[in-house]
Amino acid sequence: MTQTLPPDFLAALKDLLGPQGWSEDPDVLSEHAQAWRGFIKGDTPIVAKPASTEEAAALVKLCSQHSVAICPQGGNTGLVDAGVPHGEICVSMRRMNKVRSVDVFNNSMVVEAGAPLVTAQAAAEEVNRLFPLSLGSEGTATIGGLISTNAGGVNVLRYGMMRDLLLGMEVVLPSGEIWDGLSGLRKNNTGYDLKHLFAGAEGTLGLVTAATLKLFPKVQRATAWVTVETTQEVIALLAHVREMAGDTVTSFEMIPANAVEMVVADIEGTRDPLPSNLGWRVLMEVSFSDEAMARKTLETALEAAFEKGLIQDAAIAESLAQAKAMWMVRETIPLSKRAYGNSLNQDISVPVSKIPAFMETCNARIVDKLPTADFVIFGHVGDGNLHYSVIEPPEKTGLREHFDALTRIIYDTVMEFDGSISAEHGVGRLKRDELANLRPQAATDTMRAIKTALDPKGIMNPNRVVSV
Ligand SMILES: Cc1cc2nc3c(=O)[nH]c(=O)nc-3n(C[C@H](O)[C@H](O)[C@H](O)COP(=O)(O)OP(=O)(O)OC[C@H]3O[C@@H](n4cnc5c(N)ncnc54)[C@H](O)[C@@H]3O)c2cc1C
Image 1: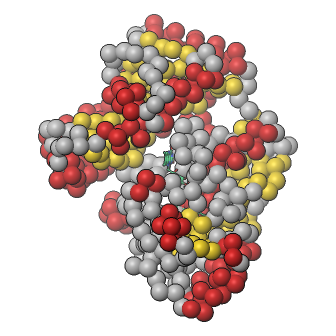
Image 2: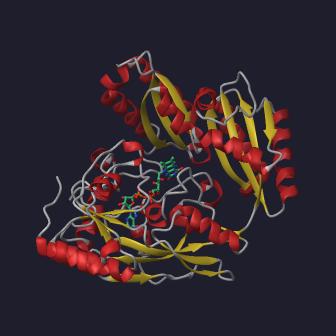
Image 3: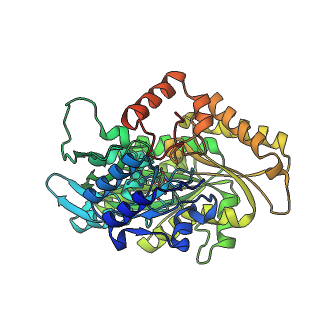
């Protein structure tokens, strides 16, 4: 339910942020109060848009004084109902979108929370460096949102998650106090590493206003599209290429044949890079400082994989355009899946070695419950991360009828295989209660204690991650 805001609070907010800094326009409110592609709808009385850390701090202080709840929002591309306001005021960070500084010799840059990921990537590129985080929503997802969800993406295998790419952070605490932790240090053992509290906190502990990000040497990539018969071979191929090419393997994405068919049918401008009757494709990348070395390493690894019988066929991209076309097939799977019909989508992880057995067991249990079920299971398999979707044509109703029971099967099977029911998308409101049951009680109690200590009034993104 939308909060009724005290008139003196509203007047003070408008005065503080100025005419550009807030909106009550119903169209603007509705845009901010629904998730990507409208799959979640909330509501908000006002969108506040601070333009500086000082404005953000004054705003949070005002909210604290009046006990007004805040939902921080970046690009609003999150997938777990964490950044959509449900009655809270929406604090959109998009006006804080500058790259404040780049330190080439220190391999670091300071970027404001509302900057889209592509802005950070471009700033790194400009100084001949790499900011390696990359994901399908990178044109819209913001640095603050990516930190707050501890986002993953396609380069985690080599560079880690967003948490691993942080050197420092600036945060407005729920009291309105500013914590300036914008350190560029790689070594700084001076007590609790506070930035890690805010990474993955989904806005429940404070408002991230800027971060110091790590830069890496720029790399040249060689990209291959490979056809494989079974998931066991996909996993064996991953081990093989990592043995041969080590950390130069930066991406390793598993794609089922039916997803390629859906994409090619639904998404204009896509084509199957290597038509085949086999069940699986792998899209992989090897990165090196030198383009010829990257290609040579990839070719050598694939030739050896072919000799071992791990792969049937492979196409190595001859140009950036070809590599982009391969990635387009991978990145548009979520869109084509939606066009296909009904789907139940889960972002889960299991140990890489257990992926084939997990899929076999879980799929069989699902089919037992819903014989008409089909599957699109793809994702960052190098990290054990599967986007596990059960799908059904639109005219069928079984998926909708059995939605909760099927979700239960997936969660229980994930836990049986020592996995996690949220790999990279987070908790939000969607998985909060389920995770309260699944994680050890001591973990939930500690999270509650941290939340209560930092945010005693419970104003920062309430009811996300953990209930108190
Ligand atoms: C097509 C598509 C592909 C995607 N691919 C991936 C993928 O490969 N890997 C992956 O990990 N995710 C992926 N996502 C999910 C999503 O893009 C990420 O979760 C992203 O990190 C969200 O960033 P955002 O700026 O849109 O945050 P929002 O959606 O606006 O917010 C997400 C959370 O962060 C909080 N928040 C936002 N900004 C701040 C701030 N400044 N301070 C405090 N809290 C804040 C919000 O309150 C909310 O809890 C994908 C999403 C889409 C739509």
